[in-house]
Length: 84
Image (cartoon, rainbow, N blue to C red; front, side, top):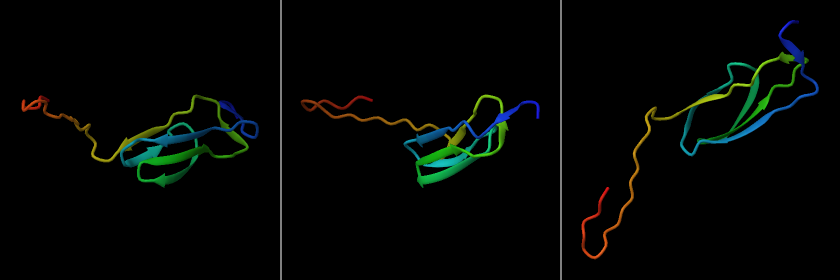
């Protein structure tokens, strides 16, 4: 089939640690197996097939919350107020 290649001689694995809970993980280009190791990490492998798409591998993921949170850490010195 045009646009495919043999799948028996290629493998791909991704170990993802997002640092925050993963909401959704997907590949729009290839079929994958996903093992969610915990709420913020996953192990993704290209599914073994006779033929796979002959194109770049795309992996997308969303994290819980949807927005980046600002995190600040400070401490006071010599009685002065901390600055952020």
